[in-house]
Image 1 (tube, rainbow, N blue to C red):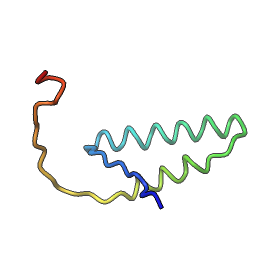
Image 2: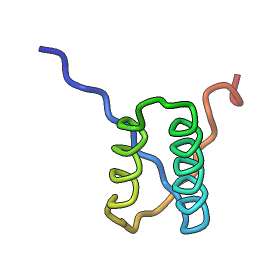
Image 3: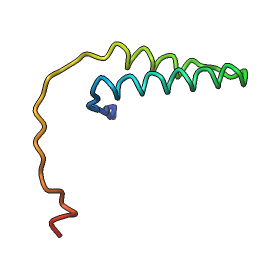
Length: 67
């Protein structure tokens, strides 16, 4: 069985708000078109309830830049 690939992103409070508002706008558009909003609803819940974590960001030179 293949392991599901997960993605983690770091958002500050402003960016978090932008994502939530964008998803709400998409949900509104889908409703106007008479389409299902289930996937967007799930993302709103997932992002809205995502835990906050403190972490350090370590910047490294990318492989492309060093070539």
